[in-house]
Image (cartoon, rainbow, N blue to C red; front, top):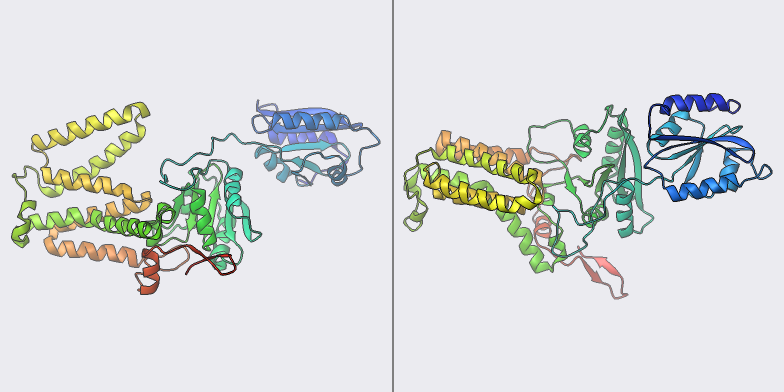
Length: 478
């Protein structure tokens, strides 16, 4: 529907019907006279800045008949005291703007609706995220308000090349999605592909925010456990990815940023790797990589040696089970894998004041009594405890669970087919890595496969990020 210039009553009746003014208690509507003309305001209670709107209403009421312009565009130019304002003759756009929290002004005789962006969304304080904590660096984090998140990035990148492109997705939700990238650095093919997919995807609503968007962007190969996206709640991490030429996607109502494309080595990185000097950062990166390998190989290798004790050298005989297993080792490992996830879920749903004492109680009771009762062997409990704790060294939840699923598969194959199953499990994991592609179509394991030793060296060995030129300017090394 196009706004009609000479039908103020008809336009107001249509907006009242579309916005359900009489049915929604929080949809506020008020009629007043501005410059001798009938006018009507529409806004959602809770989204408007009350002080600002009161001042604007006082200003509008003070406009005289002689000061009243002949068109809505002239009204914006001469009598609008607010910066963020625009006009439209498309009623659909006006309705969506109002439902998004913006302020509508309809003036008799004007052929356009005036949209005033004086909204403010309910939001929590910008604090350090619980998951992405660092020992050094900034302590701010993304929140559920998309404008605040873009401001945190703009604060760090004061460049005219930074682009913040907004797209809406969802037939019902009309969720705001922002593509953040550096013009001239981003992969243009990737950018065009992501933009096209978002614009052409037909979905009712993004009920689960970024996960719903991720499934829309990458619907295929869901059975491969390795993630296609990387998430962060840290603005500095997102900023670094933008400067490196990657694409960042922000979704309204979500405190996380999606980073793409992402490779295996990207998932193994953390902000602390770059907040510490090169030697310390290199140690943290390599140790995290080695711990990831250990968490995958530890329990399947132990099971393999327990099935073939003759392979254990004399000096490592202490790893043998000291007591007879009442329950087969494979079942002990599988039960403990499930029990660890059960404890995680219990910790998430436990009130904060009780989480610490209940965790200690669970560790003492479940750990000690499960061994003394004969359900589990002490060695099995030790190795699974290491795996459970070491899994938290990974910044990516998705990568941690990918390693967990592949470890379970290798445990089952090793129990069924002994050494052949152990080798088959490794081959299956390598295939999952090699045949996995990033959303940009590149190799997930690059620079491991295809092997590029120089690039691999730079990814694993932390070098100086910047050095000073002779003219005093800062330049990125490498």
